[in-house]
Image 1 (cartoon, rainbow over the protein chains, first blue to last red):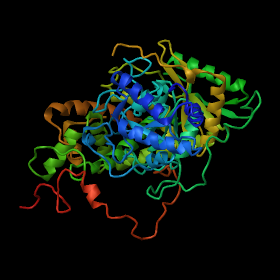
Image 2 (image 1 turned 90 degrees about the horizontal axis):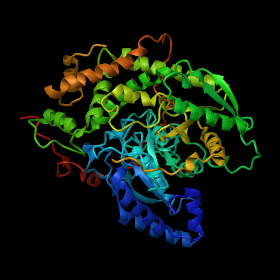
Image 3 (image 1 turned 135 degrees about the vertical axis):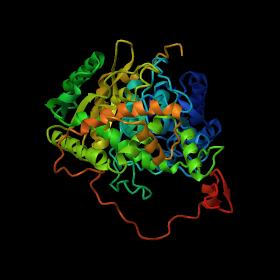
Image 4 (image 1 turned 90 degrees about the vertical axis):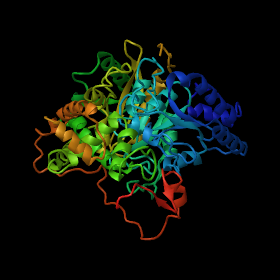
Length: 492
Length: 95
């Protein structure tokens, strides 16, 4: 039953073909059998899941038509959940249980979802492979010797392996879209400010945004409908009229449903450094979009190649400030032995943070330190503006920008884990949407020669989520890449 | 870009993260490679470009100055490493 997308599960629940308790139990059984090989979950709470499901069944019996009622989901372990630990994949928070729920956690609970557990991730969301977790690396359901992408790799693996039909992730530089691409599922980073960051443990506050991962564009729209909304507890949460993100998907159209949609193809996304298998899959996807009536427009984003350097100044700078709160005083790990207060801070933070988190804090501390602020941080903010201007000009010529989500399919576990710069270059096509604050999604569009999935990224101007989801949905009506089932190959 | 071991110890001190001698050289080498990537920004002409601090070009809203939070001290302190009489305990700072 878990092979079906949320839209079908929801219809089956309402038709009483099975109950929410049976669906939750199927999810728990599948986690018990497959999670030891995938390590997608850090925490699973069967008791709470079955209690949530029982409550959902009672509401279904009254005829409630909430679209997510009784659907099992999971949250990335960076979103605070009262009564269920929130570790951020870190030793620092290995035993931390939040006194409150994140806003998006609360919203999805009110929508009637059934919380199964919390998914594994790169420590504090700092990574592109889900290898840096204190709880061990996540494995790709298509081949367990490969990474699932990151940092929301536990969520991506859980959704791809049909452990849950949908789950949350967070995206600071590509952490929803890149693992969605590498695990063969769909993932959406909303416009900055659409989902409240309250209860999202902060990494880089001007870039962080929560969003859904699922197996169809339609499911993404339903999850985003529940997650989006104004929250006074996040000063950057936008107070906008409520939007139905599925509205364009349900419109009846003829055989050319994308007629008139202008799809921009930046030269910079189709150049050197892209795996030939990825390039071929993207070309195939563009041919399908054209067949449905879309017009492709060639354009240029001259500064987009600077996105990764800009990101690796701004994100570590904000992280060094945000992560200063982990000092062993109010929550989290405290070193067992120390000589004085300063020594307690130093030892607590050296023990509590893994190597990549320590590196990023040091990079951030350096770029913000006296004498370097103008050379690095201010400079990066200026180039951020140049990149945003490139996109503004591009959206005068097109409605959507298409290209690969990542330059390659998934790589082997351990292949680049000792080379931070090689790891960072995975984010080459994804960081710009965070810097500009605009929405972007990834959907499956093919496989490389090794049978590993490839993602198509669609980006749009601020608040273009419904348009992006519509293009993705029309693509999925005519293709079956999103229906392929992972092989669980490999010997890991 | 050159990053020295002295730089590593200096920023580790500012960040309040202990670095032992065995790890310092590896940290230095990896920071140097990261700054090699970041250095690409130096050559970009940004004369007259207004820095972009945030994706939203809006003024942050101000709320009325009213008490909106209930007293959550007990719930917040339940997850602290060491508390006593409603206070967070740290090693003695003044003798």
